Image (tube, rainbow, N blue to C red; front, side, top):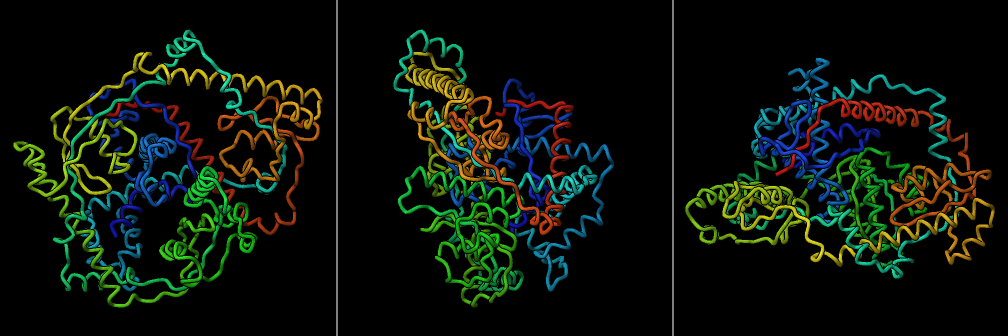
Length: 628
């Protein structure tokens, strides 16, 4: 229940994304200013954004992505996802929305709030709101009704202001037809790839070039602020023996939560399958997994699953039907598939991995459910109660231990409480903590501590920790002699990139002057490749992120078969050549008109909202402080 409440009490971006509203967050960079109070990380028109709110938002993002990926986030993944930037920008956007609601006099009445809370099935018995159940669930979640209602009021207020901003969106028939053409038109190109790696071995930068590059790009070699800490970790699992519920508590829990003790036996699902070839290399598997994760994010942000399956699925039996598998019983698919599919809630999308490949699964409906056998139900109830109570006991123990650290060495406190005393290497603001994984709260607090200073109890995804500063290093640029090899490598890569750019430009010029594509490719020793037909949504080589290549391809024609310049993507230069264009079938437009209208209306709302938000950002006085 706690997971459900937390998921929906703060998920205004999920509500905002219903349909197709997705926002691209822009980040100005952190640094350059120093907050007068360490608890502030930013301010918007004078309204402060506190460090506690930032940490919570960052933790929420980490949990979301961990649930999505079914594991810990690596440092590389965290940087690629820009979680730190996303967290801060969400808070900036929330603040702008709240300020706009205040200007427009938009409020959430007590009656509106009560109506929404009473509608939640989790707080109902026999279809009716039950106050005792409401109080009990919040108590077990360590959340007061006042806190939960404040969060719900906040979410509803954001929802109302967004609806107000986007309420005047309209769609004409001409716009619908143009949208249909843009969505369904496909193009095919041939292309050459000039890779800078071809020129890397020939680069031998001089000492003067290395020194010059170092002077001009010192920030590239900057070592970020880092800290080394000792810590005590209180894992809930260590308190499970003391958290065992009584038989009466188990019975009461089952009685109060009947919906948790049923199991779907037959479900209706849609599936998008990305196959992994039997002899695929590790790099190829990672590329397919990255595509699966990207599609999963789109589906969870509200993009219609059926078109995704029609365009990307590699299961010919279900692809044409939008991935519809119909009714599925337990045991019809591999255990890994069943584990994901039968754990989903209605309209939820999950990702399963089998020997066949990556399966995106959307639960359409549960058509048959059975009550869990009594023994299994009691076992599940016991586990849920133990998990909740053991986390509470871990927090209590951590708070007691923190009190003793004022006068007792950390090693003695660790021994007394029977917990492990850990120590990190130097860690920065971003990246996993060795042995603990991605723990943004840990990193944030570690960098605030002076040597010998103890932190308060810090909540982590794996429990609760108390940190003690050991060493702190400010951000610094090492002298050239300490990073010369790194600088030399960077110079070589830059020179190879420049040479590749020159080579690509020369080849394109030959093509634009009329030399045959096959001749230019052969003389350059480059394989001539074919993209196959693809839509704007699918993207060049089925890579939605290849926006520049996709856009350039759709601007080509028989009369103008080449783009004006090579296109740089994923550290390579691409030369495109027009091959064919296929218009969509007009008859399909009438069949899908109503669906398109609903989708495009949401798209226009997204455009309106994004434009409004961009304008608000430009006019607002936004200060981003250095995060301690």
